[in-house]
Length: 253
Image 1 (spheres, helix red, strand yellow):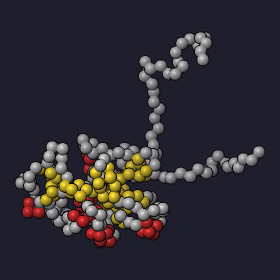
Image 2 (cartoon, rainbow, N blue to C red):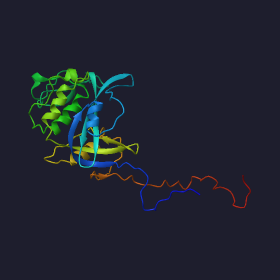
Image 3 (tube, helix red, strand yellow):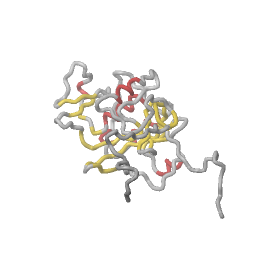
Image 4 (spheres, one colour):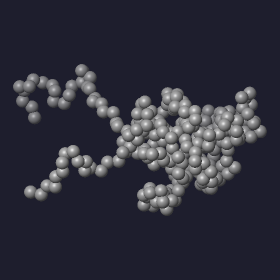
């Protein structure tokens, strides 16, 4: 007999802790190289590829690496080198202060400010701007745009890397979940400021028609180690379980 045993109270299986909920995060890097990832103690075996194709469309992925006291993960935004157009033919518009709206022609709404800065938004740009608003704590009415957005969507993140350095002391509130039972996922429909902490806006977004989060998370949104909820499927009374039919005295194979 050759059995290397351990006490039942001893944990011998390697397990990775997953976390969920809302927490304050610091941005460590954006689109780092393999060496830069190694310097952050993130082990990868090859250079990251930030270009991808989905459903016949080309995308450039912006990956912000973020951390708090428990977790290092990444927030990903898919960018496209073409303007965003809805299924009904409306364009997504942005202005210099980060307002956005859908309209076929240049917006002329009463609430739309700085109309001279209006332009059609690139795919993913609205999400990027909303993230930066919260992260940089941009006041309402102040400027929030990138001079090189046409280069960013093509893969040149120089301006974003400069922003990471400039905002090294800033934090942003993010909602994190778990996908497929093992991958950390960051919610990108809304981002929170440190002050004021409006976590109710996360709840509002999640309940919105288009606000679904494709991940599991603690429904109270409190930060902590993720523990999947266990549930037992109870069959309907009318459904027969395998081998449940017939008389127990009948012969069957």
